[in-house]
Amino acid sequence: LGPTVCVGEILVEIVATTIGDGFRTAQPLVGPYPSGAPAIFIDQCGRLGGRAAMIGAVGDDDFGQLNLDRLRADGVDVSAVAVDRQFPTGSAFVRYRASGARDFVYNIATSAASRFGWSDAVEALVRRAGHIHVMGTALSMPSAAAVIARAVEIIKARGGTLSVDPNLRKELQLDVGVERQFAELVAKADLLLPSGDELERAAGVEGEAAALEKLFALGVAEIVLKRGANGATCFSRDGSRLDAAAFVVTEVDPTGAGDCFGGAYVACRRLGMGAEQALTYAAAAGARNVTVRGPMEGAGTRAELDAFIAATPRR
Ligand code: ADP
Image (tube, rainbow, N blue to C red; front, side, top):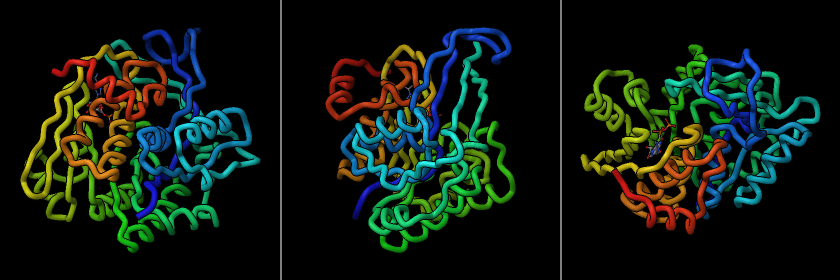
């Protein structure tokens, strides 16, 4: 039915190489790495051979070129990524605390990522898309949120499907409008990819069983719950449940695991795989991604993920 599209922020990420609190002391930083949750998702999707296309914007600068080069190299159609001549590519600085928590400094609001709108290129892409994936992070940018609303309507109307990763970030505070759009998207979604307490937040009820029941009643067909180093579980509306044990890896940089997991899962399902095989590739993509620094650096091709699966024990 046409490619998988993802709409939202394309950024560079600059990562501290030391563990500590915040950025007030001098420290070695590395980067820029291509980043942005929607960009990571679609890059992993493309790398796995899923037809993939991105909607968003970069600045007319090296950071933008870095992202465009990476996405193109991984097979992602960037015809609907605008180049903003006025505002720079967005950026995020990240430092890990000893607890595993992260400190971020974002420049997104005054970047190209917050300023793109509907265009002929977006229209042409959406009119042939078969699936749209929505990242919760993108909803906090009004321009991206408007593009998402219109794209979802068109793609669902032509028989396409929708997946939603709540990816709700405290740093990107949700206002009431965002909460409303998020709830509307959840109600239209075919597949949800929550992690941690996002399952209950998406359902608006407490308890895993109650949340699942409510979401299936809304019409969601499949819910894949991500549990970090504890693996993942796929719940289907027919009542079946599949658990995927996590691969045993040494975590170097957890950023991007959930995005790679989702990109791999959606790519595999759309390539015709069943939930079990897709879950294995997704768990491998998430695990492989945390073994290297940089949010998108560990995204895998099918051959790379096959080699990783063959070589890595599971919990
Ligand atoms: P999110 O980034 O959305 O919170 P997770 O941290 O749960 O998502 O990561 C997504 C998936 O990636 C997990 O379900 C798991 O399969 C894999 N993964 C993440 N971190 C690890 C890890 N440390 N070891 C093994 N697998 C991991």
